[in-house]
Image (cartoon, rainbow, N blue to C red):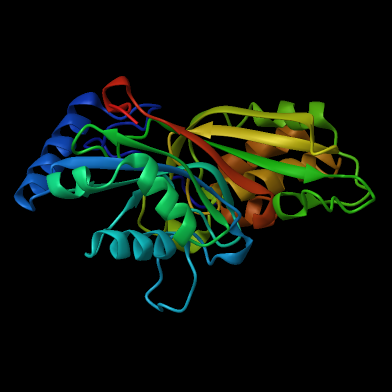
Length: 304
């Protein structure tokens, strides 16, 4: 059986919050670099997107491939008449959606004064792809990073077990037509995944090569809810960070338990195996939504 990756003695253990001293040091370097480039303000966008038409969040080398980052950077560069690189809270795969994605970028004093946030929001929403919507714009402390300052990220996965197709929410749900899921058994299985573990079994094997695979899952639960009149089973997961396809593999594994083909204890065996082949299927991208992200008190918006 493959051995789990152990946290190196020189590497701090993965916890729910970044080490405050390390975070402050990284931010000081970002501030220094921004000021050296003549940039004196950090701006964040909170946005949602319906991901089925995008090849994921991250910009691709091939400019004809539509991505969320590519769309946003293109419009920002048009508005500010220069390249405007952005950083996101969490990159999503092709077909994955977002409700509360956050991105950040730096601007100069002149650029900051040239547009009100309300005007910038109107311009962005008018020019960006219709599947993207910017819900708020805020100033953050200079050096804020949507990625590196995040304390935790939250994802929701929606599963519809109705025989009828969930036409109103089809883009954001995995339709398991006519299936029955044992929510209690799935919640029992969740207990094996909560906490800091090596999640190598729950990520794409190629992406785990030579990289740390420990993550901290703070909350994981399964519950029924109704969305737009359609009954669904929602899997909610909160963690400090996630590996490539980690949430979707966790979902596919929990569904095996919910359908009765595996016991809740099996999930503990999957985790211990540190082998992607031990886990369940990679659930379809359509059901996954990047729900929200949280930041420390000192990185909250200054004004909006």
